[in-house]
Image (cartoon, rainbow over all chains, first blue to last red; front, side):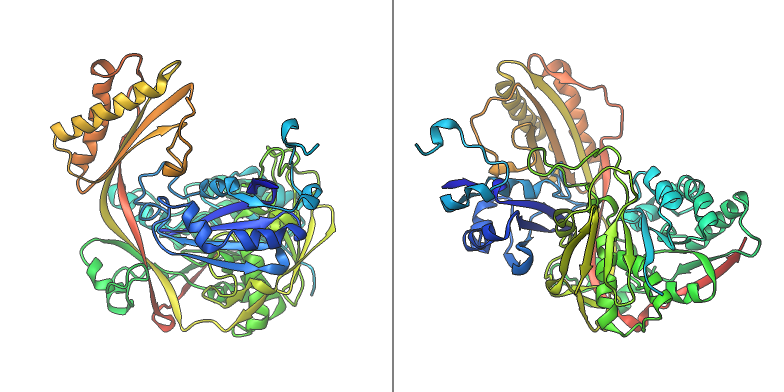
Length: 123
Length: 450
């Protein structure tokens, strides 16, 4: 099944200068491999195209189910220079909650707060 | 000794006061640590001091914080480590002596001030290239407001060894404030990276306060915590090997869970295998987390590598001004009216010759936070037009608010607008980073007695 990342992982972003780090954490260990496989640094950068202007580096800490994305040029020139209302990028991580992931149907009971609309439920 | 109890008293200048009092009263703490400085705190304080010579230059909430925590700390014998000194640690220490006396502290209670982090006068001679773009630091000459090195835990440890009950500092790396008590109580050598790694890692977990007890975390339906209006600041029960149980006072809201821990562990971390601090290079990739009870999370296995020969320095520069303002639309067609308002503003800025490096006009409720990532098509019931421009001079920045004023009677129908009630321009203090040799920064410790 294909569903938004918010059912698979939780996120937090932090700032240092003009660089934002977005941590993406699998809710369950058995969901993590699918997250790691599909949310690559390239996929992350493409998803944030227009907001992130520099390179993206991904660090994985497998035994904690954690992917840490370091996105350069993500904060409008830096916290103090940015014209964005959210100049620290505290809400930046929330966008990736909408990244679409393919997860095997058998893992449906591992998903967080996933209640598909009736017409989407397999007969 | 084992089970050293270290609690958080604040994670930033504007943090809540009550959780600090609660930790002092109910936390059974050996140490209570206050982190009150953001990247721009020192430069903002320098600017304010220049405009207002009566500004004492330390945490503006110092009185509020000390009045609340000192009674509990004195009763329990809790020592305080705090970076509330900003640009005047000595002044902050004298003020703490005042509050110690007012709270009936034993005569002779020692307060130590740690300064020496300010290196504005010599930074251009000792700093390497700028970490952001590789330019020589000297290219910032003429615009520097202040420069400060991030000191480590060592001067705090020295002050504790001299008997200080309170140590108040200028710029010290945030995790070091929390690790200094571990080094002092467990007798860790400043070069023992095997212990300083985990110790600093625990410091990092604590430095953002409620961010590990349920703050900056809730997402209804996905991540809920009980009573998020009553969060406690965290407490670590640290063992002599640098492992710790992270917890909070019983009866408070929020939660300490695997999820809160993981989010905070990597907050503002880049390479998790090389988190560089003045004291040690922390490796979080070996961390083990275990829930050992309700709101009790055991953190172990964090490792460390030897510290680097350099210290990070932040160089704050005057870089111009930002002008900004906002006005509102609602009801059917709100977005259409907002779009016309944007067009009018763009033409007005052209007519008045706004000289800006960047202009940004967003629709709050539509695309102000995630910009181009925001989905198109949905018609909002309400929308705010928010305009900001970055300019070299304040005169140019003032044009933003003046043109928004024009939108009141010369703009689009049904425009909601505030009467200007605050300064709609602000000064930009840009922060640049560089490295300086460790030996170029000499901490200065001054002692005071209540």
